[in-house]
Image 1 (tube, rainbow, N blue to C red):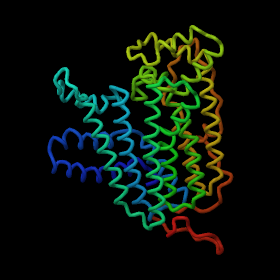
Image 2 (tube, helix red, strand yellow):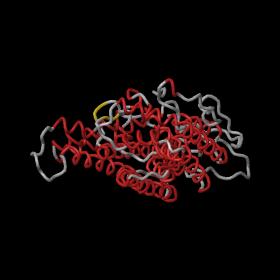
Image 3 (cartoon, rainbow, N blue to C red):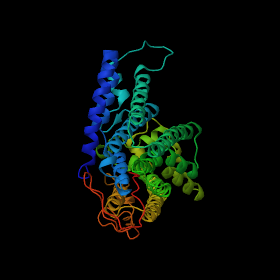
Image 4 (cartoon, rainbow, N blue to C red):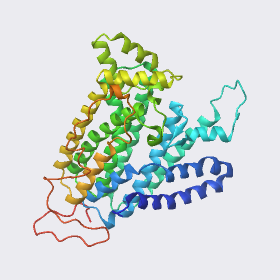
Length: 415
């Protein structure tokens, strides 16, 4: 399992989703063909399994091994379905036509059923409405999988469910703040960070880590340390995504460049650029931003001007610096946790990986900033040290538990 976590989670997903698609087909053929089967395909085919890997290595770092593997894989599979729900709903709300390098879920439905509603109808568009149901279906399947998982004891189960319940509410709160920021034209950088934390940092990084720790039966302090480390890294992940959303290569990011600008999203990057332009009374820069943010018809030429403003105001550099500070804070919190050394190093490297750029920034050469300093966390993927971790032997999946010296505490798995 350690050698290829995404493949192991993919096999688990395949088994679980086959059952659910078969159940959907027994209900109705159109429902299965249009929603259930595409939800399964979208989940099976997509992404880097980042959340699954975070959950797995948190579980391993907290002493989990063969006994915890079935529960960890099922919980990871449920997380992938939660991600499907979030992406499908987010694309509907943003009106985004593409996802993962192809048409978004609602765009595929629209192509399948062109003109599904007569002109002038008061009902919501069929494809968008059906995609909302598809996201709800993915969410329901995720909950069913967690509810049907044997976690080996009430204390472990309660810990997992506590984190699962919190994650779902945080996701909804973050998505609402995202919509609220667009609707009200919010400009606060602090509000942008709060939205990034709730919408992305917690469910993408912090909760997968705390879920993995909970599956392993870790003590409350360790769960808290991992969740805090994940919150720092997850916020850095969202800030990196904000930069990628404007400067990234769509072929690598899987989504159109400039979508956040066109939809009027409140991002920390834009909030900082606007605040700096205002403080300098740079009317030209403010005019570019005001004319672009929320402009659904923004051209590539005008997007290029936005990129120049984001760079010239120093906003890109400021966000890169904030990312570095967040990663360093997350690294400190992770190092403070009582973890198995070897899995902890894998976890530290993974946190650095998820916040790294996916593609070279597409900035105009004349305005490209200098290289960003490499922080200790950013270098973790190549060389990771974990000086505060106790020197305990790592128990391989499927292998016997290591012998502990007399007088030491019991294994954190509780079994």
